[in-house]
Length: 470
Image (cartoon, rainbow, N blue to C red; front, side, top):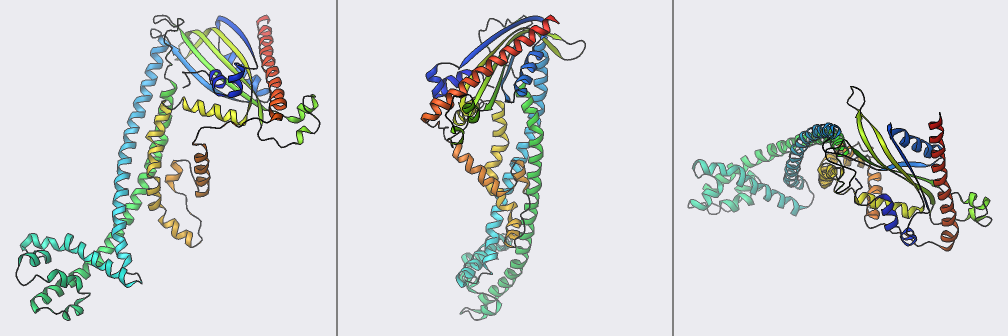
């Protein structure tokens, strides 16, 4: 919600050319005051007029404020509350599932570490195999055999540390590769018998534990996929509610005298921004550029831009028995002309995005997409394991549901987007104009924009007068 600075102020304060110029190329203002007619025909007449003239038009600002004592304020406040409650409820589900995803990710990491030891047992390197076997034996003593110590000090560690004659038991167990190799150890028979029985138990556990661990790992991965799909679903549900709640928020107007608490009043602020690319061929035909100038490769494109500001003060009136309002009142419409290049338009977008940082829409991204992106790398490492295997076999990779949640569908597009994101991360740089751009292209764009602004103003004024006479 742009409220600290208007769009015109952003252009005239952040674009060096207009900061130096101190204002638009031209500006035309018309005031229309009628308590019986509404704002909608004015707005849509101008919007359609801009589109009919081939301009690419978008709405940049849409703010409103109702006086606290009006029925319009009360009714919209109730609607906003319903949207907030629904959004809060679904966000609670999002947080619950997100915590579940976090736990699953950490569990899967632990499983993967454990499974690495089982994979190393199949390695061709002797040292790797030996290290993996020692690691698994240590886990078995700490997690499985220790239970015998609780029953009667019969675990390997309990016997080695607490019973005479078994001091070498731990070393013997770690050194023995199998039951046959235990007989070759230079130990007394008592220790050998214990070692052989524990080696047999360990070998059974080794086979069964790997099987169970891999099964559990696959089950957790499957569950992670289902939880990610739940996140996708909840995020899709919550965003419309939070966006609707944000749209129903009212702008703070401070000491504006037009808004009195007990009056039945509404203030509306709307901005339309239209742009049309400049044709250098038209500049040559108009005699504002030398012959064949249109064949030159310029650094960037230039646009004639029109900013239409609507400032409306009205009286909300319920439309019959319906829960809708019509607004009759005073409308001030200002047409402002600017000539902007691609760098300057990008700078304008950057400044408008900065104004939205603290808005609810920014909070939505923090609560959903940004939270998921922090986990994306870890989650992808588990969800795409099968895809990596398919990749090795030259099989196309299946879509990752978590990537769909973020609006991403393939790795190449992700890399391009991340590269663009990195390039745009810094402040937008407006490159210095060449002589031709400054003295020919900019001048022609300014002339076209000024004429376009007057034509829109004039056409609307004449169209409104014709409606009045009829």
